[in-house]
Length: 334
Ligand code: GTR
Image 1 (cartoon, rainbow, N blue to C red):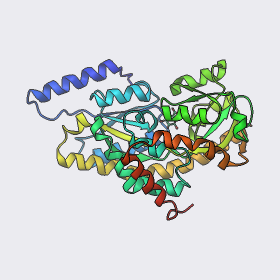
Image 2: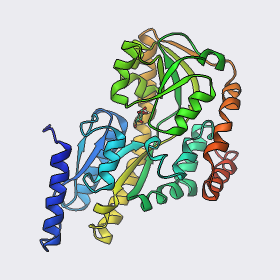
Image 3: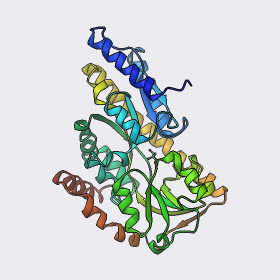
Image 4: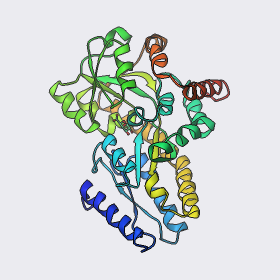
């Protein structure tokens, strides 16, 4: 696939905007989409499926071209590009959005979901919609959430069985103050770093570990250098697919509805792929001899991380969301 530079992307969009402003009508080029994961990862497959639906239903007028594997830069950088209209679609985790859209923090809080069923029900229901809607004032249209499972700690040194085992470890986190606080609450040192730098960081001892779900731990091959995976499952923050509000406004009402519908339809497809991918990743990691352990008392981790809630839940809108999610806990299957 041709390598597209960020400069070319921004340039392309500027040229398109100039044409549109000159009255030359709809820009007929694919929607450009970014993903940090490789081409076969469930998030990428899901956006690809969305693109196929769009193309079929628009008679080829609308389509998506995906730039996977972080070709266009880190999630933080590509989000900036999306806000400014240099990129149309972007599939990211919620973490890099935490700083500017406080509602996203709620879905990223440690131990906020009791189970996968609880998480999926919240995302599919009113709380999920409220978080997607909260992105618009920041220049992004939240189209849908994708699963990201549960994140757990892994490291190069030892199994984490109790919070005490975390003490002194240097743990890579995503670029989010919330994640820094979570790791510090356990007595470890947090190092924010882009995903693309983690493998080398582990190899060189710049960091001792990181945290992620089974598929990312596997696809990044971090398990090769950090072979202790401890099932803390402390965060179930989802992935989100966003569209540039700039590009969104150029679409007709019918096309907006179509884009939204195709994004929604890709969600159940993604969940099927996700479940299969979790099983496959788990198998490969275990076969590779990684020491996987359950933690003795998940509650001990939850208790230590709990003050992070008070620190990051500050607005009434955040509090309402949190209450709604907690009220759904009993109803969802465990
Ligand atoms: C993955 C997630 C990515 C990115 C990555 C990370 O689970 O799918 O979007 O957030 O974690 O840790 O940087």
